[in-house]
Structures are given as structure tokens and as C-alpha cells.
Length: 358
Image 1 (cartoon, helix red, strand yellow):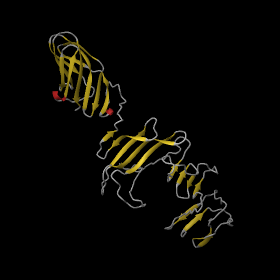
Image 2: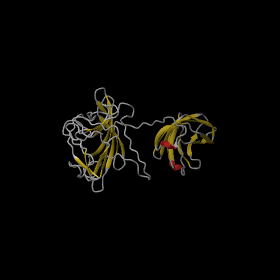
Image 3: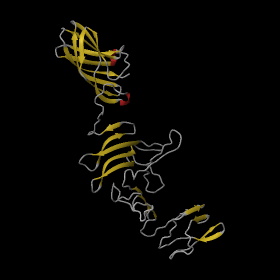
Image 4: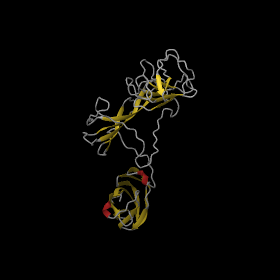
């Protein structure tokens, strides 16, 4: 313990029975302060224990040759049922006197375990106070395919880097309910590590996870064959820009009686958007004023700056033999219904149409 200082020791000058007394040199003065091989505790709670070291070796070294813990830190409740513990083999436990079996496999023993019996009592916070755009905290899961700590061997083309796993108790055991897995997605090379993310959940009635979604190294998102995509907003009268580029809904359009129309009505229409394409389907009723060309305008659910009649298209047919086609109205940024009325009878048409979002 060269260049070391131990302060706030007990006032008693006579070592306890079984104590091996070692000389510690501080400022040229030799002090007898070692507490090795104690069979009874020494209370330093009044002012604490302070170790001030300036050495290339460890400031404090604890060697546990028996079966007990190497370090036990209690609060004011002694004996404390939720202490901080470092076990004899170097594992860290907080909130319990010993490690509990790992949820994933009872034969595993974790290096770090946090236990708590109240809300968020076993949570961990990682907080960064640094300035800059890329200075946030990180949870780093890394893997080398070497069997020796501190050495590097390239991972395989499908090796797992790490997992984040979620468990719930079934009353007897912890059962896995979900998992996020990261791994190699191709053959790695020097400064080349293609990766993927796999999201898995456990089905009702099952006890093991099944892959549901995968993000590949090329950015392609794939849903499992038994999975699907559900859109939460089912009724949309004014679509929000924050809905993104994949969503669906319903809307009631505004109609414009452009040519040869006495009246028109529309039901609530269905639509869906995928990327920059919108599909619409529904029913519209048109009452022509005379036989001949009929033109009806219809508003669209997602705004688009249309510039050509070819940027929208569709067809419609009536309960009679009358049919028509749908194009883009580039002047008014809406749809145009076109057909030739063979009578002035009010007719109901069913249609499908699609247009580009520009």
C-alpha cells in the first residue's frame, strides 16, 4: 500500500482478536492499521472510512477465499435485506442478498442484477449532460467471436450481436413475452458490418417468441407471413400530415357540378395511401339536366398539386348501363368524372380511382 492513507479508523488502538497488523507508511510515520482476517466486525460508522491512494496497484483489494460475498454494503437497516453486493466470483447484485436465477435460463448467472419491489425500483438511468449533436448516452451490446476476453475474431454472417429480452411471471417462472435481436446480416469484413434487427413476440397460448418483423441491412422492412399492419385512424375527415405515408381512412368529398348536372351526392368514401399513391372507392349519385356530356368534380382526401390529367385515373358504372371514366383536374387539384348521359334519370354510380401525391 505504498503512498496510501487510511483515515477515520476506530479510536481503539488495540487490534481485535485474529487481526493481522501490517505497517503502513504515511509521511514517514509508520501506523498499524490493517484489519485482515477479522472474525468480528470493526465499527467505523461514526466518521466513515477514507482511502487515499497514489499507486499503480489497486487502492483497495478484497480477497474472499470462502463462500461468502466479497463486499456487502447495507443501509441503516442492518441486517439489510436489499443491500449492494459483490459476490465472491465478482458478480454485482443490487436490492438482494444474492443473485436470483436469470429469467432466460436458470442455469445462467448474470454479471449484474438489479432487484426491486416497488414501481421503477429496479430501473437504470443513463443520463448525458454533454453538449453537441451526437453526445447522448449509449447502451452498447458488442460481440467478438473469440473465446478469449480482450481478443477479436470476426463474427459469422448470421451471428447475433445481442438481445433485449422481456419476461413476465406466470406465477411460477419467468416466461419470455418479447425480444429484440440484433445480428449480422451478411458476411462482415474490415470496417464492414452489415446488420439487422429482428422483433419477436410470444403468441397467446405460447411460451416462446416468434419473429414478427425484420429490418435488413439494406433497410428493407419485412413482416412475417402471419403478421399484418393495422392502422389506428379509421375515420379521417381531415387527414393529418403526421399520419405518414402509409395509412387509410374515410372522408366525405366536396362535389362540384361542373357540366350538365342538376344535383349530386356522395356517400362516405374509403381511401388508403401507400407512399405517393392514393386509392379511393365509393358511391356517387348524379342527376343530369339533359342527355349528353356530364362532368362532375370531386375533392381528394390527401392534397396533391396535380399538373396533368394522367396523374389520376379510374372508372365508374351505374345501376343502369351508363359508364364513365375518371381523370385528374390539373387546374383545381381534384378528380373529374366524365360520362355521357343517355337520359335525365338520376343514376347511382360505383367507382374506384387512384391518383399521385405530388
